[in-house]
Image 1 (cartoon, rainbow, N blue to C red):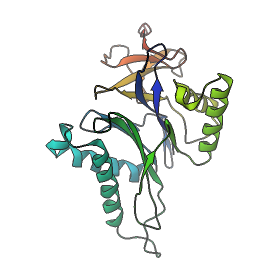
Image 2 (cartoon, rainbow, N blue to C red):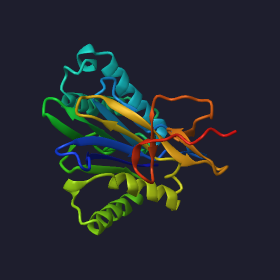
Image 3 (cartoon, helix red, strand yellow):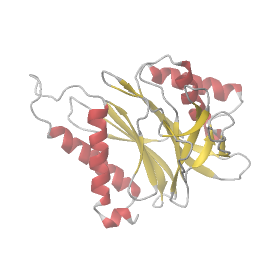
Length: 267
């Protein structure tokens, strides 16, 4: 499945400066394994990002339906439509698509295909960062919307979620911090779980993106070792060719530096 998080980061040494961060692994499974899966998507309006977990052949089409619906409505694209209403509309779109599934098993319900989504962005209507979760309720044939009132949320493989929460709590405790002081700890949790290799469906390269208060987003190319031992920038888990250029800023997952230097290109 996956492991992803949305969290509101308090930028160190910057008074009253927050930013919203989205992070996810890049592994897709389903009879095979593909470690270059895009799981963080931008809404076609620039002030929000969302990520998904679940069976890709179900969750991904839902994500594309949502992007299409928003992109076809200028009031939303131009950010005049409040972000909360956009996420509420997402819940309705997902539920509608769920009801349109046919050729279902004998119980009349679609195959149990878990799908969940985390949305995060800057809401001008609330003048603050907001996080929402939408998860499939198979029996109820709906996708209820949940307001996340904490500064972070995880979604993903059921077995990995308790471990992610425990790792985060231990990390904050060891650093003498609380949830209100979150920096990059949720990212570090996902990075470390990927490296541990405990879960077959959580892996690849951690992908990361941000939403800023001025209602724009930015994706980062993660510096990560390749099988040949060289460290290369990765975009959604894919290593960039030595000659390949990107406007994305380099991110070092160990120093947590968001303006890292790209390593020399391989000869």
